[in-house]
Amino acid sequence: MTTEFIRATHLSELRDPALPADIDSVPRHVGRAYARRERSERFVSGTHVHGQTVMSYKLYTPPGDVRVARPLLVMLHGGKQGLEDFVLSSQMNEAAGRLGWMVLYPEKPTRNGDQASWSWYMYSHQQRGRGEPALLASLTRSVIAQHRIDTQRVHVAGLSAGGAMAAVLGQTYPDLFASVGIHSGLPYGAVDDASGAPSLQRYGRADQPPRVERSLRDGAPPTIVFHGMRDMTVHPSNGVRIYENAVAGRPGEHRFENGREGGRAYTRRTHVAPDGRTNAELWLIEGAGHAWSGGDPQGLQADWQGPAASEQMLCFFIRHPASH
Image (cartoon, rainbow, N blue to C red):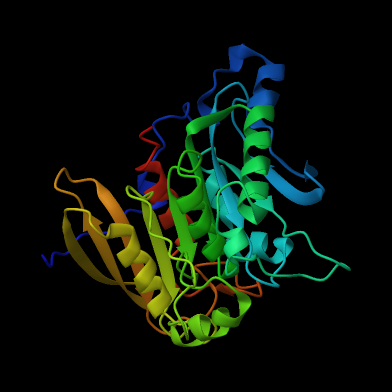
């Protein structure tokens, strides 16, 4: 293991090479209609039907040429958080808009209008072709079919239960999602029913191992993890375990960076392959609780003092297009 200081990348230093030049550089002679098309920005609601389940969602389309294939980020809200607060707390639309990314926000189907958590802890929702993973994959493919999406650049991220479900999707649909972002989430396959979830969340370990063995898929997608060290809802050791699972069996070395952004100090661990490619990142944020780091202070689950998780995730995703 090697200890080495490496500086984090910031969105202001980065431009997505797959996207066209900034819309402000469009020549005036192209005409007003083209300019309007270039500058269009939308955030619309929709529904998707899969089997007997109807899922609501919102889709953000940034300014830019609608004829150009764009990257897509699927964002999964936290348990009982709700979609609207997740949009506000994460401020992902603002960050993605600067790079020309589309952002899809699925909403967990509920009964009686109550907010509910993604079922990441149930065995039936940890498998390809079943439950919520199948529903979310179906919605993602529907959006890809209806819009010009770069299929090599589709990624998924989430907070808390949404982060845990993002980990599930990374394992069950590696052909769909190029890389994964997990904020304050839980590892894939650590429990397989509701009885094991509370202990895993509170203490970072399950009372009993899952009844059905599930090995992590070889070549798991590159993963970036954020976790507050004072998270009293999901124990920080879960974030460490997610990182360890992402790099298990991979050759490379761990590099470390200690820094401060906003009012929070952080430790950033990066696993670097022999060819220099990053396999995973882990950001442990001192003093932060169960909230999206660097988010909007008006959000119910946002920690505005911390490093900007949305920007750092996008920086990571840009460096990890699909290899298939």
